[in-house]
Image (cartoon, rainbow, N blue to C red):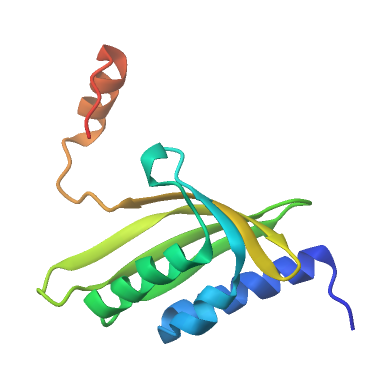
Length: 144
């Protein structure tokens, strides 16, 4: 049976999700094409090419956050992309909490992730509120 492009994309997303929660670095890296391209549009200096960087990034995460867990909240497949909303969390070895939420948009080709645009951000529990954020938007102030 041959999967439709949509079915192939859903299958890749499911394999990625399972490998993340199993902390199976080999299965996780295998989901990515060798010439995988990663972009984080809000952080352009974080872009990279190649799945070996994926291995380095996530092997370190699995080691530092032994109870790392990924919840796939929603997903949708379009003709050329998979949109997915995630909640990533766990406890680091030093006892501090990891909490990230956001959206990942990916392109799937030949049963592997060819590219991704990640919009994942750390959860900010003690921010300055919406008024302060809007004021920064209006004034042109940028924070890092």
